Image 1 (cartoon, one colour):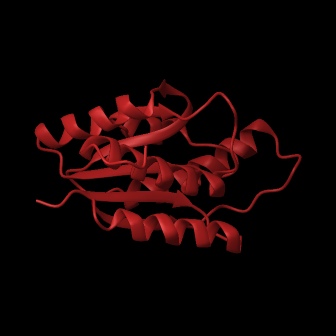
Image 2: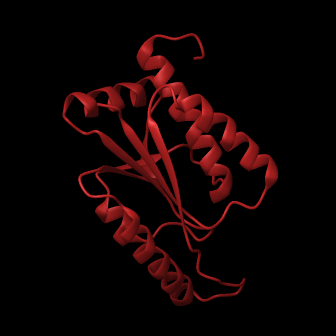
Length: 160
């Protein structure tokens, strides 16, 4: 059975250079998985929003993210406070999930304000790529590159 990978991300991708990188890694990943990228509508906000207003924005985005999660999927939320792993460790996690019968992995990327706690609670795993904060749209490209790296590690191929 072919592994399915879905990325649920808040907002539409706007930058051409990111779209080109995402297209390249999406093409490379065809040999390893069936990839689907789902964009959910971002909620408008402006600088100067109070913490309560920011929480309301994240809550509305969370509802859209949660609706986009396919049933019977293993959900990984990208979260600054999540677990940090090496590329080799994540390759092993993906291998183990396949052995355990998970055939659909879903990665969740929040919007510019981050990801709502309800989304974190719905995830099986919280994953942090770094203590750095990355723009949410750049995170899509970083995630795709890492997925490609994890698959090549798993298969013992030379990319890594």
